[in-house]
Image (cartoon, rainbow over all chains, first blue to last red; front, top):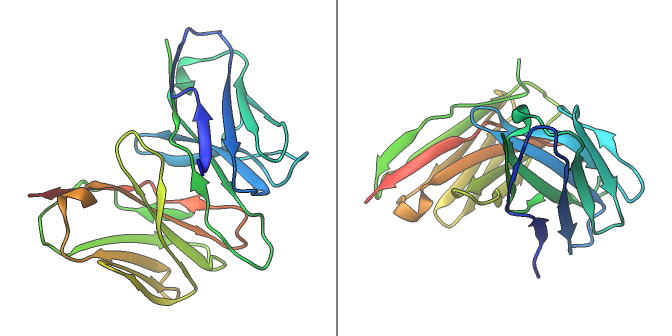
Length: 115
Length: 110
């Protein structure tokens, strides 16, 4: 049982290049999230998907797009990378609302450097 | 004002010490409270979670919530070098949107 799997683990991009970060979960969770983590800033929500077919902006969505491909997979795309997007990106998943509460489960992150 | 405030530390203690980690929050609607542990170059892993006010104990770890003061704590007894990590508090009202502290870096010295 892998939980939340993110690929790639590391990536270096030049300014203006594009890339897609992949995330897959095998816990049958409805909701999935993309966060970025920067020193002193904590985890900041980029986008989330409450269920298959829906996506919503979080706190810092500018410069990113997302796709909820199916219930398992949620990808994050940088169309034109900027140095300000150098960060560690975490994907998380969890049930959405309902009677039974459950915390989020995280992947191990993608470390992205934009030069 | 941030929804959740957490002292970033760093905190350095000798092995065997009792560690106290704390967060304050501003939204009185929060009712689920979590502590995550994050080792270097890893994702946050859930350590404990509690509902509403009160204490919850799990081995050497105790989570405490005081909703009247909007204050949560994590206590680590008999701290070990393997406890060296960053600890993140998190909270939510509905279980849909989660709010995180910035994390406290802890080092336990053998």
